Image 1 (tube, rainbow, N blue to C red):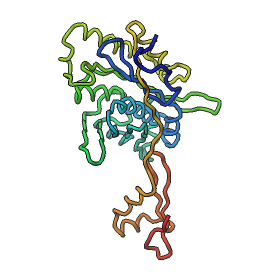
Image 2 (tube, rainbow, N blue to C red):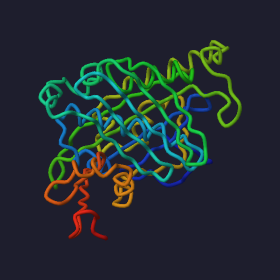
Image 3 (tube, rainbow, N blue to C red):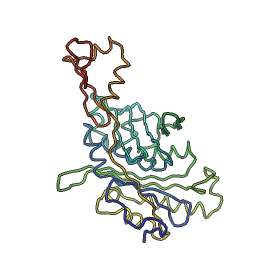
Image 4 (cartoon, rainbow, N blue to C red):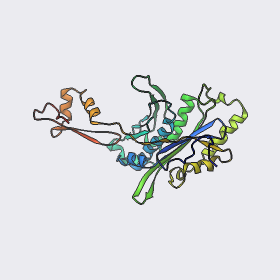
Length: 320
């Protein structure tokens, strides 16, 4: 059964978690993510048509899978920029489990985006670049990798990123959809990823040259091929436990599971942050923003609206 004798003895949470695992005693390591209330809160805040919602949900699941590899108090930021109806896709995952995701979709492009057959990356963003940024905090240097935006899905674009930028053999499957609950339809997202990671925890070589033995190649090809058999409904079905899915895939080799990490919607917007941004504008720019003696600004991630009213002089914002 799926079990690590040296790992946790309790089952993973029902939802909103990322579960690391290792296939047998091999160099194949992976993570599985299951998002319920967290992704429903994220997507329900957006007015996007379903294909764009699916793309945003897949980006959130992907950045959660990747972000849990961080070994420090930082943030992983995924950005995809393109020349399609969706001009930008952004998601980030913080070490504390905070998860955000959104997209830029001009109002005049909504109808075009709605015609996509699912979360089609090549239709919704078309040509562009995928950027991965590791933010280690204000006093640390950022690491950033950029590759062309290639592939029909964000999962395939991420596999291409690891092949080009990190030289790590990688396979990823993602899924987003709605399920019916007693409270009505709710969004869910899931994903699973495996990578060939010899020397995990220390210095390691990268790329195809790391697979020096034929056994290594067979090991990796088998793990990647099995992962590709994962069905979308298996990734988002709340009645299928993560451990059950891992057992279905890798029971012949055995699977070791490790401590799960949590995920929750974690928007960092605040009135103070918006005010600091407004303070950077000149007086004439501020005047152009004023409507009915106030300025309203909304967060792109959670869509919360912040209203700044002018005082009696018409020159200063009222104190909070």
